[in-house]
Image (cartoon, rainbow, N blue to C red; front, side, top):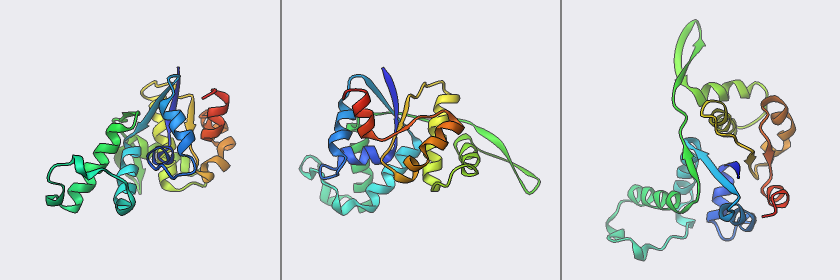
Length: 184
């Protein structure tokens, strides 16, 4: 069984039926030969996306008792929880802090943040992308989860896939390429 770390865009594509990558995301999510993993960074990003796009999200409220009495933040939490429940991913949490020196002061910061800071020197990525890659690397290196692929549709990451792989030994792959080589 192959272990794939899913970037948040794959999960969102799975949840949005009209998304151009919905079909391939469904193949990945329904595959019996793939174990799908994510991290707390993934959960944070999903929560943020659902909160920002809440009005466009399809959700069957008829199954939710007292929906009309809930506050908007409560509705967002409920919908996020629902989507995290129906998404076939195992979420892992990297634990621990490391020392990080700033202006002759030693600070304890989360291991995903220290790894992300290190990565930002090598790659020209957005902070959230550095955090996702850092989290995947820490799952692999600290928790010994043998991640075979980091799956994404993010062009910024894909454009630097070769450099990321050379520097980190993490294989970055587009979901359509994954579907092709794994016969999904």
